Length: 313
Image 1 (tube, helix red, strand yellow):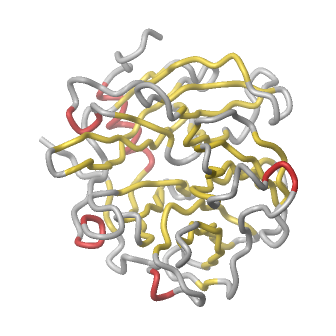
Image 2 (image 1 turned 45 degrees about the horizontal axis):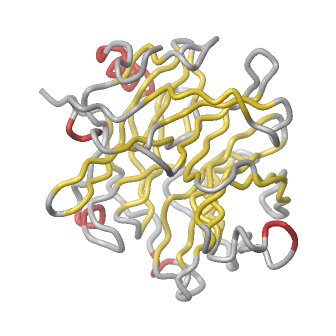
């Protein structure tokens, strides 16, 4: 029997294209962080020329957002990022380390996708740091702290059967020691086609909470849902719990109908001090939404599924 662990906010969608102060066809797949006591969304904005840029929205309560009047980050027009971003920038994920917010994002070009890394301290000035992968990678999420002296990230190459990998870096620029850690599950139909990182990992006393996206293919097209797993705190290569049920699926009209139908997709979540969690997600690649639950309920669900068996640990 399906267990409900998340409640959609009754005011969804929280941001839609018609709310934007500049012309947009879509606004979705946004990174999220807390800065100076406010919630910050780094919005993926699909402009009318078909390319994506990053907008900014802020909120005191995490539900009602004020949108900055202009995009805050657009594709590069010079330097080493110019060619890799010639078709736009997409899907930011934000990780805070100290007073710096690091942003992994997809650089989209005529050659495919590479993972760019940028940083900011104030969400006003954004500095590009490096292209951290070759072609063709789609997602990366950075852990909020070093493990055994190394930076750590989950990543999803865009080649082969899309899976979640882990890699390590001494400096955030050069990444290696890559290892496959989670694959699609042939027995769980909702996640039998591909899986990939969603929110940056969240540290809890019970393990690293991994909210990921998963896809199955049907005769009517693909369906994107959200799943949950827990990784060992000292060695996140070990998946100590992975749920056999999804935690969120396209249900509401604005999740089923839009630029790409039947999609819920997260780039970030905020774990609150009171034990609740807000998961921000795109609906049908068109609008932004939020769902609320309890961190422990998500962990319980993952742990009941037992250790992951799709990859040898």
